[in-house]
Every structure is written in C-alpha cells, then in structure tokens.
Image (tube, rainbow, N blue to C red; front, side, top):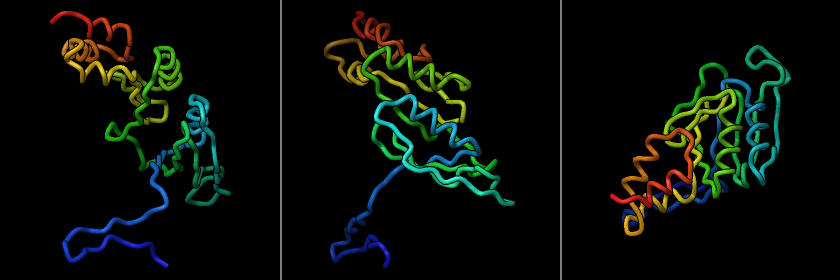
Length: 176
C-alpha cells in the first residue's frame, strides 16, 4: 500500500502528507563508521542504533557501511558510505547551540582535529561535514539592540574562528 500523497482539494490547497519521520542522511565517500563513532563520542544522549556493513562485492568493499542509524543528542540521523562521487559542502551544516564556553571549546577541539577551522563558528570535521558551533547567547546578542550593541557583537563575531562568549559579550556591552 502506498503512502498518501498531497492532493488538491476543491479550494486548491494541498493536503499534507503524513510521514513517519524526517531525518538527515549523511552520505560519506568513505569512513562513515569512523565519523559516526566520533560524533556519538562527543555528544550526550547519543548512540549508534544500527549499522549494516557490506560483506564485500565488486561495488562495495568488505565492511563498507551500507546503512547506519545513529542519534546525536536524541535526534536521529542515517548515514552510509557512498563512494568517491560523494562529498559535502557548506550548503549543509549541523548547528550545535552551546550554553557554555567549555562546551564550545570541547566540541571545537573534537571536531577540528584532522579537520579545519572556518570563520564565525564554522568548521569542517575530518570527514568534510560542516558544523556551526555557536553559543546560545549569540542569538540574543544579535537580535536585542535595546540592551546592547548588536553591530559590535556582529563585528566581533566576524573576526573570530571559534566563537568566544566573553569577547562577544564585551563587544555587545560596548558603546556605539
């Protein structure tokens, strides 16, 4: 039986389709299992739910990840090794909102080891996945011009790689 699809009604408004879940799928060129293990080691409430490896054939070498399900902070993701035609770009990133500088520092160190730092809290991990590691306070600082200098906070952020909450707060509290 097929899942229901969106259909037009007499009013021209499409009905919504009911699905069982929506989750991102990360397709790695290779090393999916290594990436998944790194990710679940860095985040609380994370685990590998299932992992299926290839038995080996002409298209998929032995132990290639054919399908994996894992959770990061309780959110479900899927992943597999797709081969050399797959790569990641900054068009997709995983955003991590952190309460403390210690969380930012720990995640930044864990994800940039073998990867690369980018501007404004962005980084690429060793597998090419883009991440944004941001303090929860940043959204407040950039949107509340009544209680601080949003332009100075933005200016300070644009000069950083790893975001530093204390520096951002000093800029936010500075005069125009």
